[in-house]
Length: 330
Figure 1 (cartoon, rainbow, N blue to C red):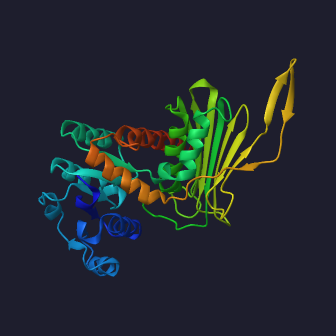
Figure 2 (figure 1 turned 90 degrees about the horizontal axis):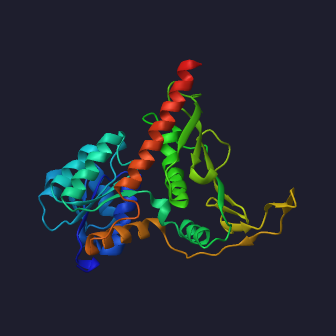
Figure 3 (figure 1 turned 180 degrees about the vertical axis):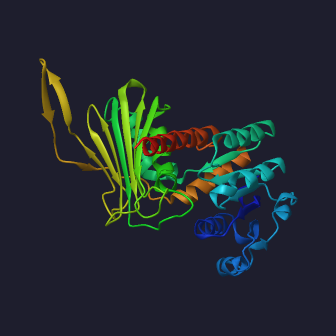
């Protein structure tokens, strides 16, 4: 099935949903896209992209339309399970935004349905389609920094404060998915702390610590109480270090030949100037869409499949349990 004959629907036309609408319309053509949203003013926004895009307020119209092969779910996280379950049971391939669900046993049920019905279930961990992350993974696998030792990620901003989720659930899924991808393992322990400073019970800042097999460690610092935007990922190995700063305009990915060696029983430092690592200039969301379309067409396994998303969700749950247990015992 060529891509230009593939019909896709998008459920939800909020800010990120509209990004999906624009991307699908550009890649497939507007006549191959249908949008579903119950919000009264949604059609006006969609028409601004193209009046050729079909629109409905009724999810059942999407489910019952046999010409629609795949559906992108960009609704609020608390609706992901219900909407995705209906779509899968209706025979649709689904790309659901992160987090896949809010409860791991619900995610496991969606995975089971997709497997039984031989359908694609993909989750929108879009940063795994960022060309810098793809390049970083390639260089790690090629041994550029030797054995992986430590990863840390800062995702900070004076951002939009959410009332329905804390900073951990809002920001950290991106970083957890990246760390899982780079490590190629699941953590053996998860520990987290957080502080609710603006709204009671909703942590504005959290620090999550992950321990992996082979003595690999990671931490994730997220906050929407920060004076400037920072999106920094540092990956440290025995032969060098990578720094990825997506908030920079240039030199986003750097390699530092820095570290420590044990020579005749003594620890010695080595260091040199950094070098800029080039990578392809592609748009992560467009690459995510192309990957979803190809998985449908070729019946292949998504990079960000259900099991990957389930493990990210389990880590979020363990971190949440850790935060709440500390608060309870404080």
